Amino acid sequence: MNRNTTVYLYELAWILPSIAIPVGMLAALTVTAFGAGIHLPSMAGRVDPRRVTATAPFDAPGVVQVGPGIYEVRMTSQIWTFTPNEIRVPAGATVTFVATSQDVVHGLFIPQAHVNAMLLPGQVTRVTARFDTPGEFPMMCHEYCGIAHHTMAGRVIVEPRR
Ligand code: CUA
View 1 (spheres, rainbow, N blue to C red):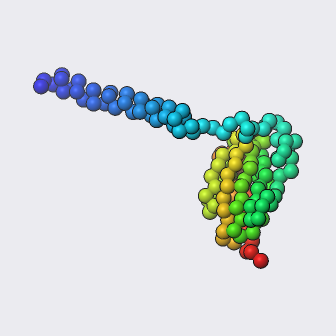
View 2 (view 1 turned 60 degrees about the vertical axis):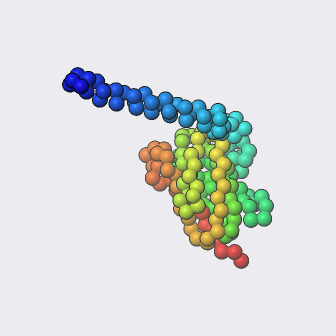
View 3 (view 1 turned 90 degrees about the vertical axis):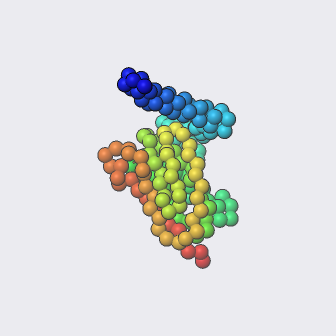
């Protein structure tokens, strides 16, 4: 094998994976999108981002008990707060956060409860968590949303069951 052929083989060894990898990724994307049905939330979960505070359930943000031990938090996010910013539930509560953003992309991150979601303007986010242990759990924005992003935080207070 002469030197020129060796160089050619090295080139081929780089070029083939650089074609095969994107083709493989595109195939994986196609399979998950059309085969497994993974997609963005549907139109059913949308609100007009300019009229969030006038649209149910975001016109009355807060914690609502919807069943025995089951709570729903109707939440809006805006620079640089969550409404409500402090959430109180009893230990053992199953809490569904129904949230959206009024302005820019925010995040909802409650590490101890494994809540990690994006809040997009006009898109309704739903995420459910269980709070078994009494205590105070920080809840913060983890999508950079402007100059005071680092101050955008609240807490979930889980009260011991009486
Ligand atoms: Cu809101 Cu960062």
